[in-house]
Image 1 (spheres, rainbow, N blue to C red):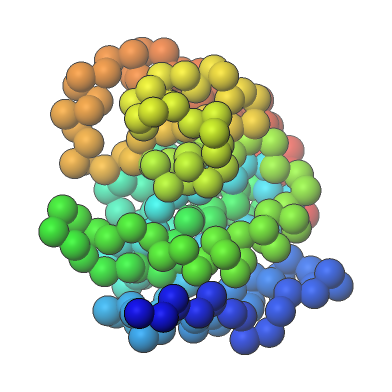
Image 2: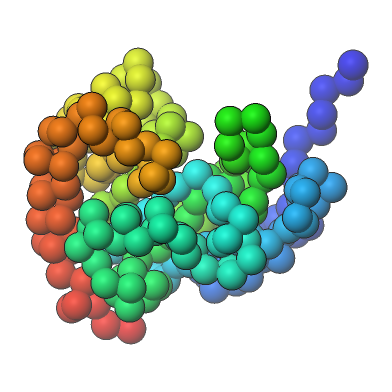
Length: 213
């Protein structure tokens, strides 16, 4: 069997392109169209002045339908974790939201399929290079942690999250805030007792209210 050809952009990102131009191109990406059960609808937000970057897995069906990142109960829990209200969370001047996969990947036996790799391969570096003010990145779930932490990542997600202090001040690894992870939260009370207060404090230190356009 021949190896699949690497994904290609319709147009390459050039050094002269600004963030808005790259965002528009990413939102128009159709690289995986034939493999997406609901078709392409890249969902992401970012602004040049964003200080907080949220990197999750991939949109679910509800987010695919609305086109709004984290527009579901998991997002409500995530906002509670960070202490950010909806208005602040969805203000791209303050918060960039760039998942590992931009489109809903489809459903597998145990839940949604993993994020497709094409998004990171085609767009992630170009977007990150145009976010010079990011001070803190939240790595939500295994795929984000694997990509950003590399060999620094521990043997399991639980161990990685428990070692969150090792990745400060740039990163905070988190589990996915899905209700499916309720048993995990119950087995790991340190997450709510130790990590979440530190997370809210770290987000507060970003002073997002002081960002100007």
